[in-house]
Amino acid sequence: MPIEIVCKIKFAEEDEKQKEKEEGDKESLIEEPAQPRSRDLAAFASASTLHGLGHICRSGRLGVRQTLWAFAFVASLAFFLYQAAKSALLYLEHPHVMALDEEAIREMVFPAITICNINRYRHSALTDADIFHLANMTGLPPKDRDGHKATDLLYPDPDMADIVNRTGHQLDDML
Image 1 (tube, helix red, strand yellow):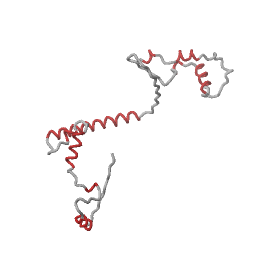
Image 2 (cartoon, rainbow, N blue to C red):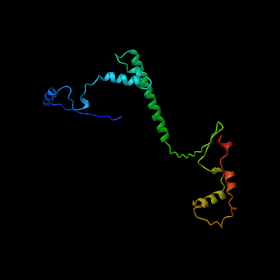
Image 3 (cartoon, rainbow, N blue to C red):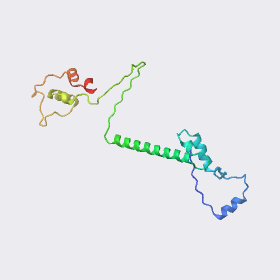
Image 4 (cartoon, one colour):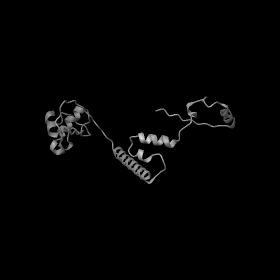
């Protein structure tokens, strides 16, 4: 919805020229006779779907009922803004990583819940051999800062199926 903001500064000469013009001759739409703002606000409020606004902005003088509606509306708005700000600050307090995966299924048994842990392996279940093999596979530096060669260590050959089954997160531990 476009909004037009107009600022007019009138001088005495312009007032005289304006009086000389005919009533039907208008320079712009802004100079049309305006309805009182209270009627516009009441019409907007009665057509609005915002709960309580129609009760607050009824035409006529301000009564007790309208005052109570206005108080309830402002209190509810203040409580909502407080909760929204508190939740946003709590969310922004810590960094977040989110991974989403969507799969289209025609029929799903309810409740279908997927619990995903971003950490693929439980660090407490990893052995030194697992860490060595995973570091070599991912290009991470070895655990020992002095460095060591794979021939110096007597680790068995890596079995990824065994590592995943042994160190992966178990459903019983999560629930």
